[in-house]
Length: 225
Ligand code: DX5
Ligand code: ZN
Image 1 (cartoon, rainbow, N blue to C red):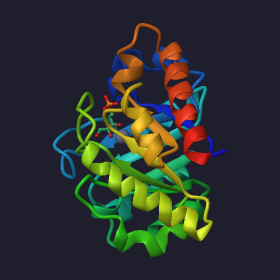
Image 2 (cartoon, protein in one colour):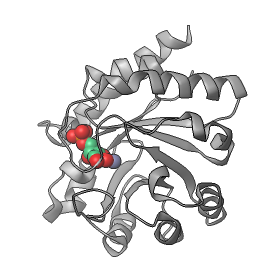
Image 3 (cartoon, rainbow, N blue to C red):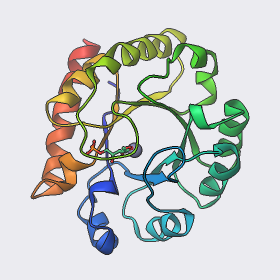
């Protein structure tokens, strides 16, 4: 059975108490760290120095989502920081294959993200260069938005391509993931789920992670049957 991973996004956490906020999600598979530069997306979050500190204290591995322009130049530095996984946007990279290889060479898993309106087809041939494909299920930039069901066919096509070629690429979805929408995304073929408000908006984030994992795993099980 495909593994179901829940990666809470600290975008919805209390940025003044990040270390404590990380401890509240120690049962997560990884922590999703959203880096925004106010160019690629109309919002600004944190940069490499803060990410390095998070890496130093986090009880779980880091999954960085770089919503930054000029990814070719900036993404390798995040891999050098020892992050488990570094995801750049296809729309922000000039040489995505070269960049994915560089991330892997520096010891990180290589992820590539697609905005909701970016088709997956032009990138199918490069899937073997990636460890993870991130299909955005909202427009990147802000937490708390509603899941875009219009992205489900793209998730299905990506899953078919991956299963058909026998390569082990994870499909991550990010944006609007709740106990309700996670089942639709899992059914379509996603197996790594980012959840910001659904985890940090809950009274007990660790319990919310368990509920999401249960919902996602059940659908993965059904889809595999
Ligand atoms: C949005 C970010 C997401 C965001 C998800 O651009 O990439 O990771 O934190 O937040 P929710 O789960 O609230 O949609
Ligand atoms: Zn994200």
